[in-house]
Length: 478
Ligand code: ADP
Image (tube, rainbow, N blue to C red):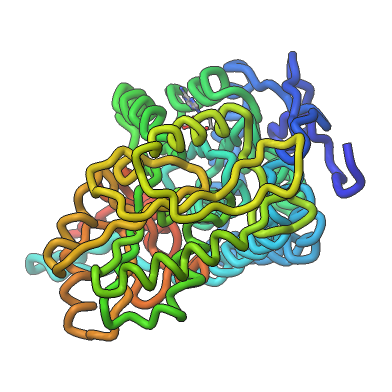
């Protein structure tokens, strides 16, 4: 344990009560490789109790709550998150291994989601539809009911903000299954939401293993919507399971996001975005940019500039707050190491420096001159590895950008306005950035993928439509 934690880490949060699970799981600090606390190992029975508690709130005051009331609770949660930014950041840094500055940004983003959705809550309206003589037709936006949220370990706070935040805004009651590798801030969020006055049972948090608690949640017959962020393999299982119960799913499954750098790009402005988008959170980011497509006329210059940055990167313990932290687990390190092995035939342009020992550290690695069909240019690595791919024409750049199974995010670096507009249409991705990457996180900006990156949109107002269903009312009055 450590000082920042003010709530029980090894319990379930069901119906507003911290309850024991029948078993616990050890929690490892990725920066040291040593266990430092335990979390509950939720069972199918615990999930069932959580779903029952959530359902009950829909038939009581929460079911009758106004958008204004929900917005006020979200605003209070946001305020408490802001007040606890430093504690949350330190907990997340320890649990996930991310450098403190990133963990701090995640906590602030969680607060921002609450603020944004607090303000949006009472601005979601239906419409009236002109219809036959004698009719008045209008639409209502209603919650799905009980929503299940299965989230990964890489950005727990941000993903809770965008999915649980939007679901609560629309009046759903939630069951959250955080990832077994990183549950601590999900439990902190439960404690904060409780303190902010969220009625008991509206948010339930059941930590546990994917195949146990996660699978039980996905297939629970009384869940009305499932949102999942994680791997393509598990996403496919979730979608198949949801199909059995005929419930909607939102899937966000990662990507192989490209940045296209043209001959007229401002390379010095682009440089920090190009590199940071690959190494942020040690590359364990769904929207990481793992492919840099460089026009041949600037290819050498760009490779040299990126290599210089890579050579200066320092890797160390999360609380030392260097450029890059450890990977989440020994398993993840093995996966990334195996990919690096597959790059043996490539030109390694540069790598960073590991400054610590004991944790799951790996040197960020930049490969240059990579053929677009190489495994390292096609598969999601989920580690600090980027490839530079040269291209000759705009058409070729688009063709390479669209050549993977994924389509989450892309960026275009060019001063040519017509090209920016053209490519924004031609590139297959849920978000396109022009002369930036990520737009600073953008809680306001709808986010989601095409292809194997998933479907459905989170963030912004769009998420509120996803976490609600439309009812049409046609009244005949003559
Ligand atoms: P990663 O490979 O990045 O760990 P996963 O897709 O395995 O991503 O995990 C994302 C989330 O899905 C985690 O909360 C995990 O516990 C959960 N999960 C894993 N397997 C299953 C499953 N079979 N059913 C439901 N949830 C699962």
